[in-house]
Image (cartoon, rainbow, N blue to C red; front, side, top):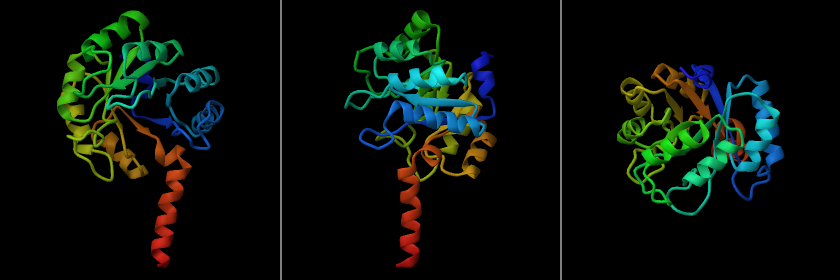
Length: 227
């Protein structure tokens, strides 16, 4: 197994991202968040944006999953080959990209994109999928690792309040490549259950690195209890 993927086996990856317009939407801030979660034991970091990735790569030697959210279409996670190559050039070990069945803006197929990333950069590719069929297709297309990142975020995939553990289990059982559980993992129990379902690693973002959402969860609970 590739050493980067081996280092993530059975471990936690933390997604260090902030949304546009938020107070924490700053590369230096995201780098400090990455340093903080590394101090807590995170085995890897997932981050987006070229400036954030460069800053984090310079500060940390942990496996880094990189992506670039760009555009206003349905496919905006590393939407084109040019985006993927730029992400690889930041030093990210793994390039994450949308691997749903939706058409990519540059007209390339997923297989063409994966092959080009491998040939041009030598980096691994993480395919973010939303369904079982997409996961199978991504592995067939040459992706090195499949993530359940987009489950519940496409109009045709199943959604729910927590991670799609059934999808994690099915993909982990059937695919020849590692499967990373990602998406709505909000509790330590859910993270542990994802590993028990067969996940190679677990990515947690909002529940660790997004104080606005965490505050909203608590505020809603407190307000509801006092109503």
